[in-house]
Length: 291
Length: 282
Image 1 (tube, rainbow over the protein chains, first blue to last red):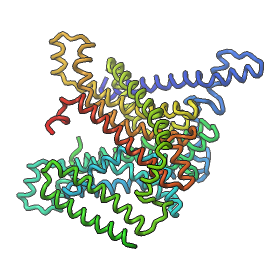
Image 2 (cartoon, each protein chain N blue to C red):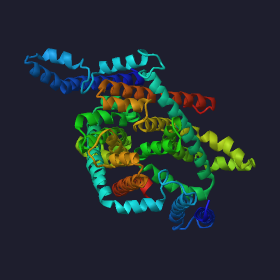
Image 3 (cartoon, each protein chain N blue to C red):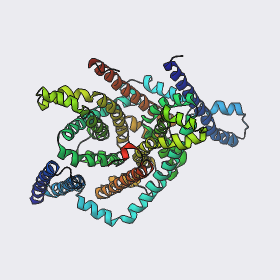
Image 4 (tube, chains in turn purple, brown):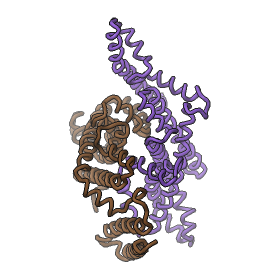
């Protein structure tokens, strides 16, 4: 067996075990309701019947995997894309804010990193606070930012994008500082012997050297931006987006809706990371840095 | 703009000039780094205060730091109650359970190469997911009190710590393992004396990431339902009443708690992994 096949089979085994545990817990968690119902109706129900019913409840404590998949399928294909019940519509709302915030955050991180690499004053004054800013649970102030900006008249995509940007700028900043400082003394000296201007040093040496670091940070940053957007959609008032879907599901006890929104978010995260990964491979290959 | 605003801008320019001067001339001195960082922080506060009063911005939009500090001092008992509810009961208990479980699972998984091979990609994938999303589900299962918050925190911190610990246990090189074999160390001994210590830098990496996640989990979970106390509850209700100074006071507490928690883990890390190159020779 090749290495890849070995890993694949191991991953499959782990996933199968997880799905197995999921089914068992679904039966265990949902069975109490069935027994209550039976006791109330004054009837006895057998184990086989309980298992069958627990996996098909309308509002289960824990929906079984096939119910979640059915909900997901229904949400994606069951309605027109413009319908408020379509998961594609909600995912699209979340995605647009995520991408806007990711672009903002990446740009801010890049600019700050360049400033910090080139100015010792910025390095000494900004960097400690940039690190400290990440120990603050930023997500927790998300609803405040939304409400405050709404009261000033800024609504819709921008407030969510700001939170996503705040979360995604830090990985980019840290990665790019490391990346822009990656050229060693020999390489810097070589450019000095060429009498290269600082701008040339930046574009011909520092920036290309930083690409692997940049893409590693972008992968972290884009998932952070997605999480930020979803949490920013939680406060009351948001009616569209995967976060709003989670919240309305929890208000009305629609567990299948919550789980399918959650899975939609997970799939979105995986797709976004995969896209960044593809871009990474393309760029690094074009630059002759592919491993 | 009135006088305080211009004064703040003047202070900003002066402080920036001083910072540039110090970082160019005295960068090697011991006091330079903390001084420049603190001055920058103070400048931000002064600028904030000056602009808010100078432009007479409504406190409903952005309260001045002085107003926030006053509100903080006024409502210390309230904030303390929220702090114990959210941080001590919710975040801390969840953090301990989640990290403890992750370490134990990592040690168990480490015995089987097959499991390790399968679990690492899955764990990496799950760690990248928006796990906060399970908060409404866990609130539904465990009720409104701190137990559900702790449960959210457990799930959130579990995977980052797990993958770091598994990677850490695999971090010993062949030479070191051979040395243990020449000592005829059994599995338990080589785990205890070689691989656990070698895993510590990785473990603390995960533990430090998990501190912020724990606070986020505990606070965000309160948005889905909580008793009438707790930092997330207070933030969302105070926003509704447009009591922004109180919101900012809560944020200050959260920021202090987050930095303190992180700093505590960094201190413990320094004590435990004093031998690691990143901790030596400062």
